[in-house]
Length: 167
Image (cartoon, rainbow, N blue to C red; front, side, top):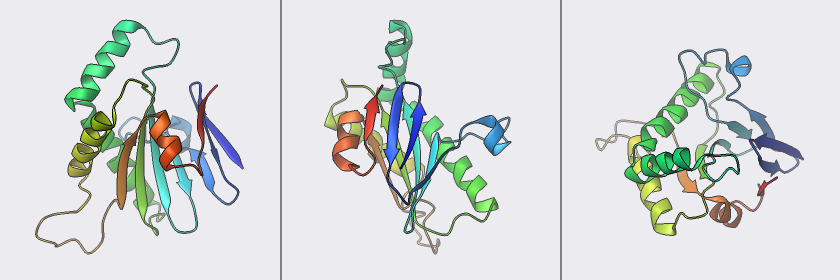
C-alpha cells in the first residue's frame, strides 16, 4: 500500500497501484510552463490523474475560502483544472506513458458542496477537456476516458479502493 498526502488530506492506494506525487517541480521539471495534477496512479488497466483542492483546510482564511467557493461555483476554476489535465496528459504522452485509459478525478474538499454542485462542475469540466472529442468523430481515441468532481464524502463512496481522509 502507498499513502500520499496533499496538505492534511491523505489517500491510501492498494497493493499493485503505482501512485506518485506529480505536482512537485523537481519531479516533472517543467513547472515554469506546464501545470500538473497532484497525483498520478497507474494500475494494470488504467491511469488516474488526481487533483485536490482543499478550501475546508483548517488553516484556510475565511476570505480565501469564500473567494475559492465563488471561483468554483461560477465555473472559473474549470479553466485551471482543464489545463492541469491537459498539461499532465501532454507530459505523459511525450514520455510515452499513455498506454491505458486515463481518468481524471478532482476532489474539492468542501463539505458544503451538494450533489448538484458536483454534477454541474463535472459536466462543465467534461465539456472543456473534451471528454468525447470533436462532434465530427475524427479522433480515433479519447484523451480522457472519464472525469468526475468529488468532495470527500462522494469520493469515498465512489472510490472505496482509494480511501481519503483528513489527518
